[in-house]
Image (cartoon, rainbow, N blue to C red; front, top):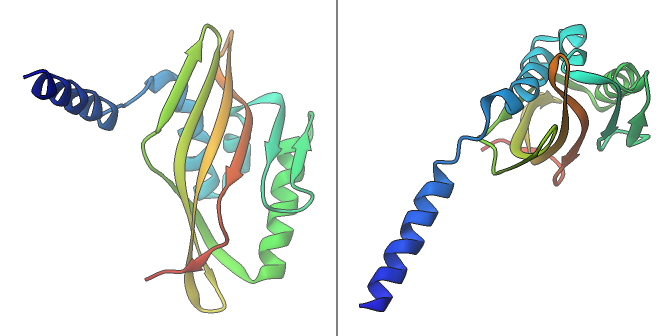
Length: 156
């Protein structure tokens, strides 16, 4: 009987975590950033960030911070994509797998897939993005984010 109760409790916990939606207000700047990045609207994507964000990405030099971080990252990414022959890039986010909110600070992990064309082939880069957000007078803003994952592979 104890085993059945334990199994039922674990099942309920699994279902609750699978249905986890997180705080829409915390996740809004994440979607603002990615949605506008996909549209090619760097100004709107940048607006989801604090004035001096910190960014870690696979593109060299791999780390940007300070008031020019976002603009410099966009320039370095654009240059890298051109050198690699990548076009039509877009990021798709899945539901957050973890969200920790502590007062005016939040930590969010979101699975992400970057899809693009390279030398006539559709490529996918399955990854995850980890965000740190801060809540200020104008609401939640991205303070830092990291792109983490293996190399891209051809789409199946």
